[in-house]
Length: 126
Image (tube, rainbow, N blue to C red; front, side):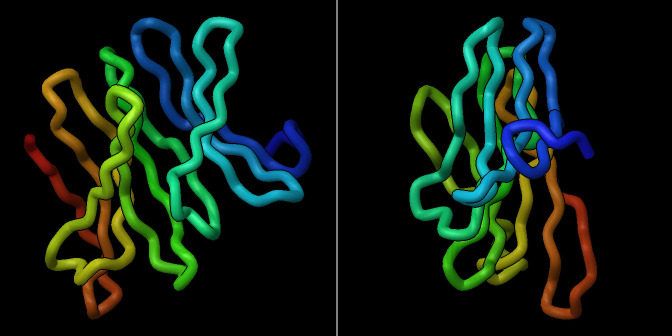
């Protein structure tokens, strides 16, 4: 991985408008980002004690990704209109969910880990 912004960085999603999302790591932790034109914006989920990663962006600018709380539990998130919403798959029992992509209708795809440590995909529709 390139050593940009300090330690590590990765671009993980792009939409048709050329907006790019991803994450970077520095001395303060792991943070999501949005690069829109020449404007760089950090994306940090409130309460994400151990980091945020932005993984996907829709044509309308909705951002999805994953954050880790103070108990090392991963949760998916949706950032829409400046508001964060947690995306957890109920059968994941509140742990280890990640949102990877979102389309213009608001459908979210991602992964979760069940109690047997098996990884599954999911589709969430609004």
